Length: 215
Length: 98
Image (cartoon, rainbow over all chains, first blue to last red; front, top):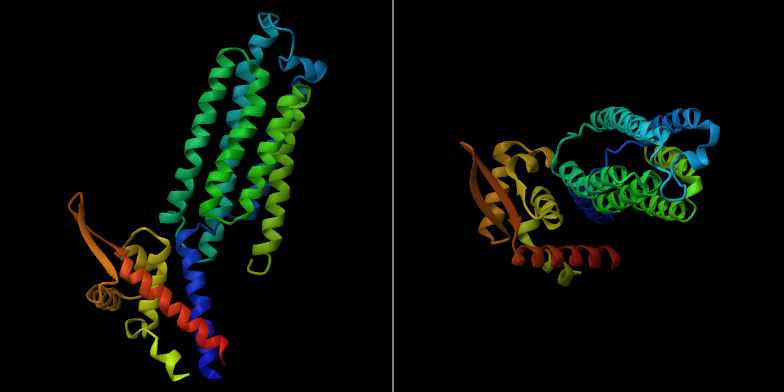
């Protein structure tokens, strides 16, 4: 009996080692929550600025109406907000993940986190450039669904190297991006849901599923 | 019962060796330092186990230089993968039969 217990333990240990060595499991749920809060704040800033008629102000207007100055001024403003959101979300996300890794006594920068980052970087960089070109062609409204779709693809690609739950988040972002493409009037709303609400929901789920007991 | 135990691989008798193999099963290759950190073994201990596995033909060693630092990486061979699978199957059968 004692021996069987020992063998079971060996199997459990093997399983955990296989997972720990090939996946980055220190991703904190709180990182998702903080990124979501930052994104919601960003969406609120954009909304206040465009309150007058935010549905049409995003550029979903008949072709040829992009020449007026309000829309020209909109592009740098949107890019600035997007970049600020991205930087703040990354900073706060990194903070919570580093903190979790320290608690688990794991290194943050190891083979699995490098793989995760690389898997996400290619779709993200492609998406970033794609959106810049869209803005260059003054297709502002298209950039919103595009960021969601490319981000979803990046998550899907990265989910191989971290907890599987990231995969579901990826599917949601892609679906939402496609919906936003069909109803461009709700671009900002879709963006707020995708980067704000979904991140918070995902983060809290992760936190309660994996971290609450160990925190 | 005796039959099942006979299939247990002697090379995997030590837990450290079994752990090294399980890491190399899911990673294409792994450096000495990464293994050391993951398994929390000492240099000497890890080196001994790695040499034993290498001598059984279960892992392949490749040495390169990164700048001037030597960098040794380890990967599981096909023989090693097969042996590891067999060993796990034997373990599983053993537990099921109790």
